[in-house]
Image (cartoon, rainbow, N blue to C red; front, side, top):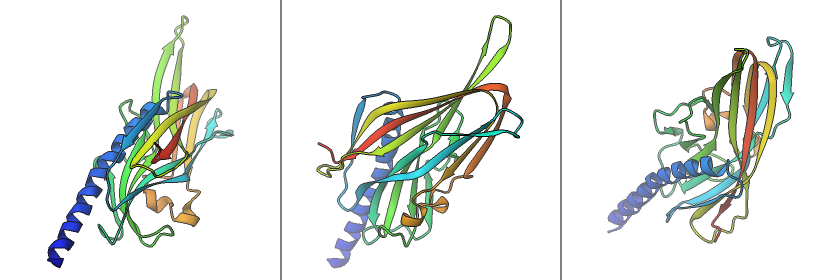
Length: 252
């Protein structure tokens, strides 16, 4: 009886963990809708007996530099590229996938924090078990905001072509977490924009403000690289957008 009960508990926890992979993927899709519509609200529900959802503030910081002189004259843009992450945590006593386990969902997903296709997601979902960590021992599913780049060209009446590069980043901010229900409520709370013209090169770096306090460092997120450099056609126009999304857990 005891053995059967343990097996049943393990299977329930495993099914929970698997189903909540889809929950965070759905949440990522909703963030893409909410981030660019001020005042829009979406609530996504999940179900769990053993796990819980947490929001970790200021987990990633994206910084931008541009050059208009073949890399010899760089300007660091003062731009709020800071964002939190959403985590579903399952205690390892209930379900463990093995210390050091890492999976990106789907398995074919690009590991770069910058994607350049219009159909690309604006976030990533990763599964990870990394022990020890300061906030406890968990198997985790993590929603990680990333960036999307879109390009276009406009030809004027003098047959001159201007190339545009637009970068979009959702910025997740902590809301009122009441934990009264198993749900996440997302609210669009503003869009920021910076435009620069005459740009030849772009450099984007990501840093991890919670690396020391929580262990949310480069090895946790496992991006392909923590820095991306792009060479653009001469005198391009770049636009950087951040959409602020307030995340409230268990709000009713």
